[in-house]
Length: 468
Image (tube, rainbow, N blue to C red; front, side, top):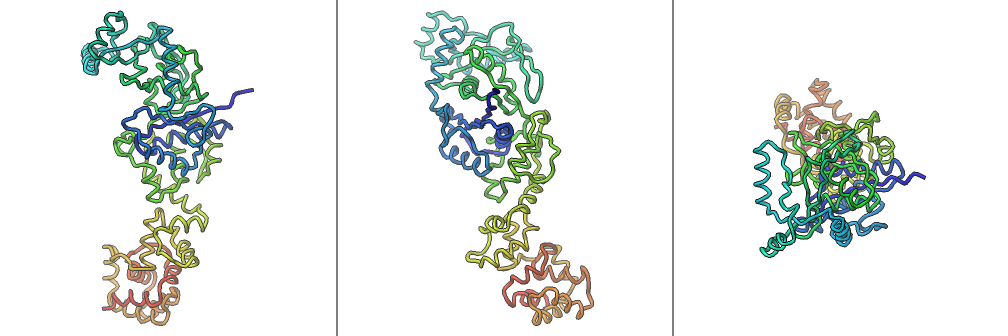
């Protein structure tokens, strides 16, 4: 019997999730759901200075809002608990002890300044920067002298010489790295904390993760992690390194560079379906068209369709998927989505009619807020295009329109017919001035349902303003 596929998402709670993080989570989640496997959420919080409880809480909330549930992880539990690396210290200590007993690690007393000078010297000599092995063969007396001087060592893994490390990447295909190009690397920091190379690889293996999809910036980490797991006699997952997601300027999305977060997008009113459908198609080709729900996204996901070129995040594409997601909402869901921008205490029937009238013209709730002001409050001052239309129509046109509104008020068809009869105008020359006077804009939703929702006398009041 083939073991169940297991994937994972392993974020650090040092900031808010952005869309690059979410795409990684999504692809791992889709792969697990497609094959009936398991999806693990692991929190890599060994950076104690930058990890924050509030970031973790927001991360969990964001994933649940997106519908990316996890089978093992925080607040769910599982056989490999704990799922926060800050609680897995004893496992790391035991693994390091095994490596030490096998002679595979050694203390390194080099300071950051010494390491930086060494890298610069290698670069100046045209050699790739790698650890020079300064502390590799220190004897007991030399180590004791460093200890007496107050130097706190890191622990480095002894990379064997003359090895060729070969693996098949699920995205980039055949990969070959030479161990002589890698250099001994840190597995435990000077403060006693486990280094990323070490804890990440160890946890993947101990948690039974069979496939890891992660950013291509980690591709060069893979040979180091394969060496570690080999030394510990532990199984390694298959790796697939995703092309980076970049912004409009071609820069990788980054927390530190202020990439917009999921929380911010949610606050603006973006819908989970819009974000997931966009990300599904960034760096992953698919013949599937239209808005897909999560099960359909899972059925359509294929690692063979993952691309190697950087995927560009296009706000126009996001707006397009958002518009489709809005149109797919049920009437009740659409009303709930827009409720925060509508007047408090609005009659449910009126609210439903308003949402039905404007939703074709709404991408975000802020768009509906504008039309809410038009219908229930005051329209915005006419913009330049609207002012030109109003000026061209002239006061006599609006005098006739205001007079017609006394009889027809909120009946758009009858009002337009009466103004047409009184002024001889038709087509855009008739409808545009009326729209600009009533809404402050020369474009927007169909006017008939909007007028029916306006308070009595509001139509006459707005048309009269331009009759003077």
